[in-house]
Amino acid sequence: MCLRMGLIGVNFSIHREGFLFVGGAAVLTLVLAIFSSGLALVGLIITLYLAYFFRNPKRAIPAGSNLIVSPADGTVCSVVTEVPPAELRLGEEQRYRVSIFLSLFNVHVNRIPVAGKVKSVAYHPGSFVNASLDKASVMNERNTVVIEMDGNAEKTMAFVQIAGMIGRRIVCDVHEGQEVGKGEICGMIRFGSRCDVWLPVGSAPQVFVGQTTIAGETVLADTVAQGDTARSGDII
Image (cartoon, rainbow, N blue to C red):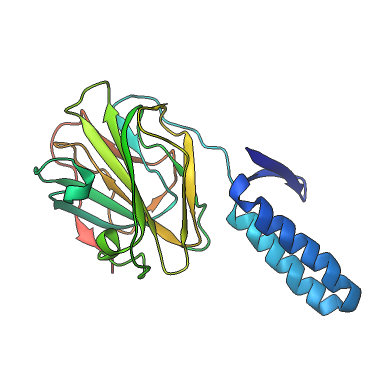
């Protein structure tokens, strides 16, 4: 459910998680206007920022069941090969992990990376260290969604919604056993956060550290691509 608004002739929508924030800020702005135009201006700026933060733009989802798209807007901060944490239950084979950092100015609505069946959804309590740091993947509060692709139990991937220093609420709208489509909205994190994507075994990333990603549009990997096209590194 989204609220569609018009601003200077441009239509945009707000994710339902933002209704209370935007509405509350707008009411506060009206109250402040009674006492001070200066305070009202500050309230208006805050209201407009909150509407901007909770924006939910439409996306053009690339076709192809073999394409894995980014679940989040942001910047690729790490591309590494690792054995997934035991909590993911993805086995003990190494696979690529692509990590995406979301700043306060990115769209925070998350999208499903690939069509398939949700194998599991698991919440893990934790800390709230800077989400741009690699240790955030295992230390911070997070929510893991494991997806079985193409009805193949051996072909699984996962994405993890990770809270940051400021982003302390994770919203996940999918459940175990649900059939999901690539690019579908599946929740959000507020405010400032990180998403880790664990690619299927044998798949290589097609993104690099420092690259900007767009949720539902940027292709992270092609599961049938030949060769290793990954470009590894850490955030600088």
